[in-house]
Length: 228
Image 1 (spheres, rainbow, N blue to C red):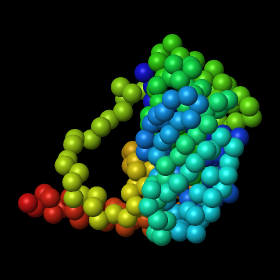
Image 2: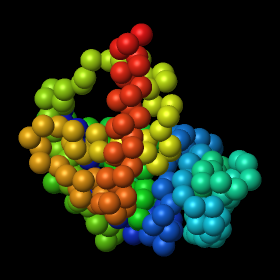
Image 3: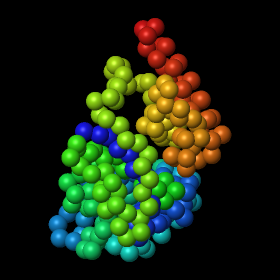
Image 4: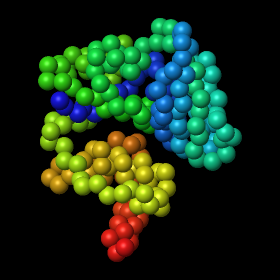
């Protein structure tokens, strides 16, 4: 089995369309779809400047197929959870296409700058080219970002994470997680800060600053842990 990461610009999907107009807002699904009939519910997480979050929610609420988009708490900071109700009749989402093809995918898709980042799992007899062609149906744009044999993925020995990441800001966590996912820390992969910046939709200088601070915080926390 192979772990494949795809960067998808889903034309006609409110997540991608609204996100394109709000590049400073990052959207992430934090629950699966639930509900009966054509109306389905889920919860999304938004991160970004307060005014951008409010504008994003207003535009998202007005999009086709969106019945409701209501914050679960006042939008006064840089982070918000939003309860969304979708009219799924005629819905042609990426999730639905993958399910129809019988392709496993990782939940918690992140969307930034109009790009949906999907991680899928391809069996030996699955045709990746066919999967991409199906996802491109309707004018969607699909870019292959990563294609790795799962047996070759090395997982580092586990360390208790409690406390190690507590000192990171939400943006530092996001940048660090993205850097790990694209292979920035894999020796010999040739992945640089610019690649991480392209993946997350930020400037390379900004990404470098976030990574530098995140690495310093994590390493100091690890040093304290080993000392104990």
